[in-house]
Amino acid sequence: MTSRGETKRKREDDGPRRHARECALHVLYGLDVQGVRESELVERALGAYWAHLEGPIDGRPYGDALVRAVTSQLDEIDASIQGANSNWRLDRMARVDRNILRIAACEIAFATDVPAEVAIDEAVDLAKRFGSAESAAFVNGTLDKLARMKGRLR
Image (cartoon, rainbow, N blue to C red; front, side, top):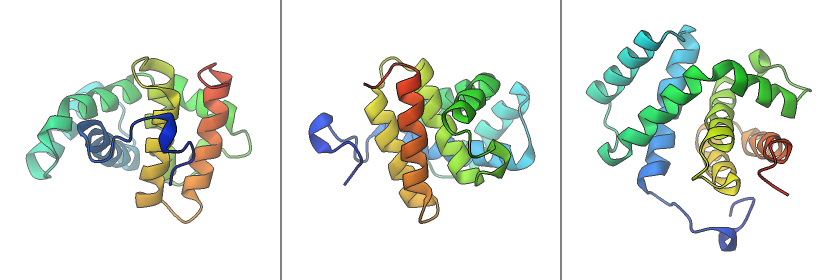
């Protein structure tokens, strides 16, 4: 069960974009651990991910685009996350949660073809799979506020 319910949208289930978000999370997490932001190193990380890990090929274009968008707009994305959750500094957030938030915040801010509800639901699903017991609620609350601040939710 997701935070917005099944009737609001068609579930992406195991479609290419769901896989793409998961792949983007893996790459962004690795870049975050290493403190890497330079575009040439981002491209190297993407190449290494696809060369050494089995990811669904149909999700690669969207996954790569997400990684590039997040890393190129990182300051703006992080500022919007911080604005939506002033009680937590980004450097104090769990890396998994922080990078899930970055992916969804990027989609909310820049991907007009992705409804905010979809970005939030997919992020909550990632948080349930890869985060702690509290991650899903934390991600949901932060993204709900961020989407409202951006005018993407009522």
